[in-house]
Structures are given as C-alpha cells and as structure tokens.
Length: 388
Image (cartoon, rainbow, N blue to C red; front, top):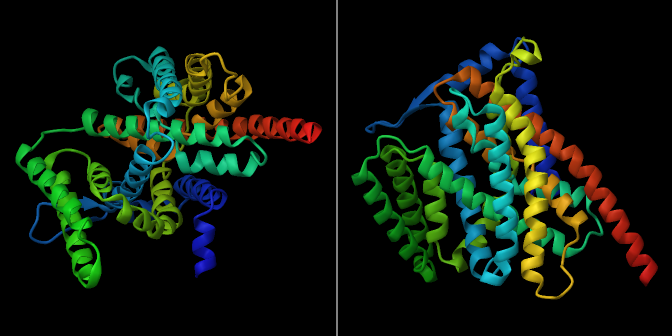
C-alpha cells in the first residue's frame, strides 16, 4: 500500500494516469458504451433535507474537484509563505511570464473565436495543469537546471491563481450574499479549528473541521459561486503546520482517483461526425491558443522578465529554457476542462467541441514539450559533462 501511495506522489505516474483516463473516456464515449455510461453520469443524487440535487457528472466537477482545489490551495499557501513566491523579487519574473501566458492565448482565442456564441470561451486556454506539466518535465527533463523546474512551478501556481479568480468572478450566477457570508464565517471557524488541532482533542477537532468543511462547501454551492472555490478558501485558511501533512495525505487520493475520474468524465464527449471546416471556432481557438499562445506569451514576456530581474547579471534562464516552459505551459487539461464546462454550460454541442479543443491543444503541447525539453536537457548534460 505504501509503495502504491509513493508511486502516486511521483510526478510521472499521475500524469500518465491522467492521460489514460481522458483517453478511455473519449474512447468509450464514441463506442456503443456511450448510452449506459452517460445514463450513470446523468443520474441525479440529492442530499435529503437540502436543495442540493446534482447529476453524478456535477458531483464529480463540483464535489470531488473541490478536494483537488483544496490541495491546490494548500500548495499555493506554502509557495506564497515559504516557497518560490514568498517575496516580490522571487515572484516578479514568473508573474510577468505568467501574464504573457494568459494574455497572448486570450488574444489568439478571440481572433479565432471571438464571435457571438463562442466569445465566452476566452478563459479556457489560459490555464496550465501543474501536475501534468511537472510530470512531463520529470519524464523528459532529467538533468535540466533546477531553475527551470522552479520557474515552471511558480508559473503554473500563478496560472492556478488566475484560473481560480476566473472561476470565482466570471462564472458566478444569482449570488446569494447570505449564504456567501455564512460560508466566509465557516472558513474563519475552519481556520481557527486548524490552529487548535493538537493534543488529545486532535480527533474531535478533526471531525469538527470535516463537518465545517462540508457545510462551507454546501453554502458556497448554494451561493451561486462554483463549489470548487470552497476548497480554495478552506485550503488557504488552514494553518501551514496542519496543511502540509494534510496535503501529503490527500495527494495520492487526488492523483490516483479524483483527477482521473474527473478527466474520464470531462473527456466523455462524442467526436462530431462533421468535416473539420464545420467544427466550432471554439475548437480551433482553444486547440491553437493553448500550444501557440503559451509558447509565444511565456517566451516573450519571460525574456522581458529576465532583463528586468537580472540587474546587470546573467539571466537565470535562457531563451531555450523559456521555450521549454512555454511548451509545458500549454498543457491546460484539468482546469481548462473545468473552464470549458463552465464557459459553455448552456450549449452542450459547443462545450463538447471546446473540450476536444482542450484535449487536442494539450496533446500538441505534450508532444512539443517532450521534444523541446528532451533537447534542452541533453544539451545541458553535454555542457555539464564538458565543463567537469
């Protein structure tokens, strides 16, 4: 059991598992198995005594994925307090590069799919899947300078912050301010309880935290804000000394179950039986903006950032390093899939094509990243060997 958990904590295996889950979901959606599986995903499950009644697919995206964002928020908290983003000087360069990695894909998407009916999809190609990107880096980037991994990690975390803001602000609807206020109070209580989690009352406090956490999730869901934001709020509220072991304990479950289940359900779409020219502009906008937009945005803005932060010194990263980070940044996947579902929730046909665009764009980025990162790593190993 411990060996399997350690495997799920590695960077390579969860990325492969995620890709396989999406591939299986896409395959089964285009076979006679579509009907039975879709019936399960559309089955509604209600919580007795409440107004919460959602399909299995929504329980996955609104419920299970909230746990993923809970873990993401705890990692954000670590990086913002003691990690790679705990000072202005450390955060400056990746912040500028991250801005390019958001603005340029948005611009490309709007050029291709800025018309009526598809313009709402502009946030989709802005995300970077941190687990997937680091997994690809771990597979192909052996021997790379540690600065590249640190830069990519900071970049992806900043992308997560931007994605969280988009989800919270752009896709809120019919806000219930009372529920939202009660959720905030619950988050404060959760944070206080996490600071009391010690001694012989540890289990009682832990159970209370679990109850408060579930209540906060229900209140956020009922408030009109996407329920995953509850995970973000709770993860940021938890004290770091408790968040670190909690994240370590949840990581195998997130990597081994939650993300693959979400990837399967999100990729469970029927490939349209139409000519490529008949596909929605949203498909092409995302499929192009993810790989091309991220490469251009991260590389160009990254070059500017290196000049700003260098202060007369040799930049920590070369243009090849930035190109590698750009290709990895184009792997949108998890958050992009969620954004696709949210952006086109009223139009299932465009939503399915947007999801296909995320899968195609992310796959192109994986292939490009494998090539670029491998070449950069091989060059770095040769230079290191020659100088030693």
